[in-house]
Image (cartoon, rainbow, N blue to C red; front, side):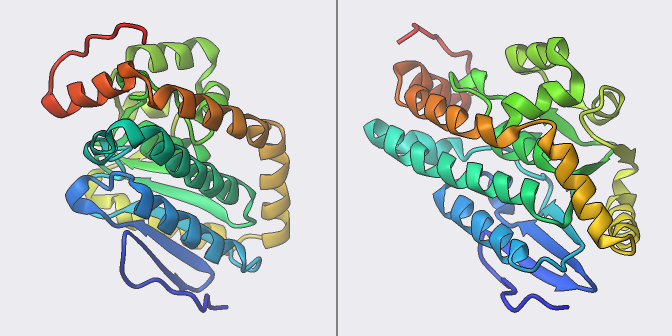
Length: 267
């Protein structure tokens, strides 16, 4: 089986071999930060996979030193007063891409190095079926740090993975979670040495691809049905749209760019 829409260049790459699609986030100079063009490309690549029900595995990875450092805060801040409209579109594509990854028959294996942060990085980790991380990987929620809320389904999936109390602490504190702690609390599946990450992810993808495809697809559907992510996605998007145009959100973005503590006013 081959996917006829291989994507050889751009912000998201796609290739397929032996029933395994490799979907690569490809903005390494921006730590694979998500902007509007990136989100459109991610959705299109996910849909290209979804259109082929015989696909067994999607291997989701990031080019460069980081899996995905979340939203492109510099581009977000550059929108000024238009950030509300801009973020509504970005969030819509993120939610749509997450919905596809959750509902596609293929098992999604995320391969994480460096940072996985924000609605992009941590959200995609939450939306994956299996997550392998290098020992040096780090996880960060980051949303409330810029006066926004978790999205990409993370508001529902994260508490299911790590428990309500721990999810609350992670989202309130915005602390960096090292890979071994992420494994211990159930945020990820397995930690491997950094220099073995690609090898281990490839081996796992091949092992999963050799499994019974109908059974695996239906098992995946049943497990995700128990969480009910899709019901929460519209509310996440609506809330994010309301918050991203506030003075606090602009202050939060500016503080990250300027590497200082934010001064929130509740407006």
